[in-house]
Length: 176
Image (tube, rainbow, N blue to C red; front, side, top):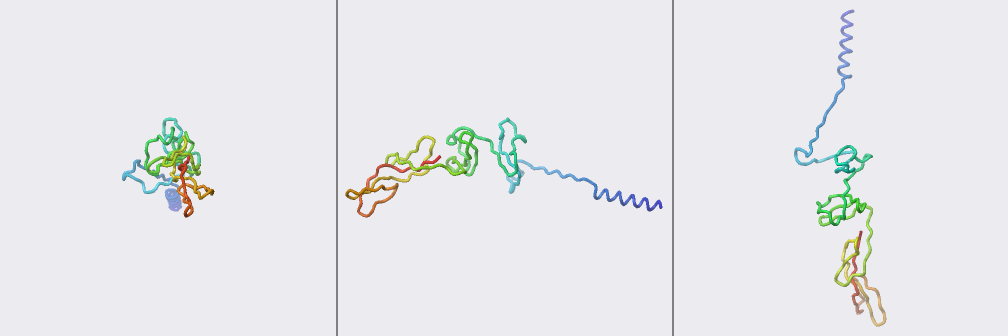
């Protein structure tokens, strides 16, 4: 009977060792990574910089829900920001808009933009009002005429066969 009792205690004790033991795994990530870059990074939330402006990088900088990215807000006119790297993103608290750097300037992104064709510039020179940026010079615009018939000629448009044309101004695509 003593041998059976010892065997039972031994079996139950062994099963507790196999199934009841807790394990912990510690994963250490190095930044910057030992090889200079990560091939993949998966996360539920991502904060870039001191997003809440309290002077430290801490948990309060994280977005409040999974699937979000939170960027440190940049101030001032994006036109005066230092050049970035193509594809770089930044949030402007001044303009309340997300911007990306296209290799030559910071461009408002997302949600579309407001554009219009400005016809007030003189022929050969395109300019947009303050707060608007020149997206494209569309060319000169004017009139087509033959005798007493006059028709609007759009920027870089042509006239019918033998009709005459004269330029009045420059068409400028201005965007915010």
